[in-house]
Length: 127
Image (cartoon, rainbow, N blue to C red):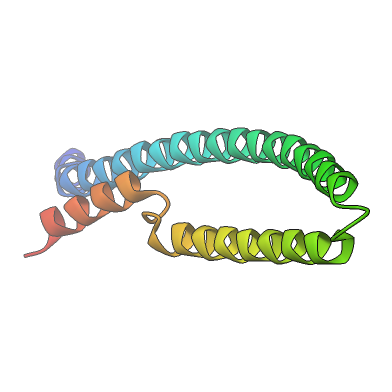
């Protein structure tokens, strides 16, 4: 019986090591994924708050600028000046929307480091 138990332990030992190694690799990759997710969240929140502040101050400046131009041309070209300003604002809004769409489409994929490490792991286990 002693020989049978040693033989079964010896047979399971490589399997246990392989399973342990795979679980260790999976654990490391999940930790990396968690770190990348946290970094991405922090980056996104920071960008959102800075963007919101920029929009707030930009809108305040545009409102003040619009009132200034309207006051300057109130007696002579009030409708024309407000029309030109509206068209300029519309053009700037379209340009910003196109720039934002381009940045989202051309941004690198999320979790790039984790995907790279998983690809290395897959290559290592291929026969």
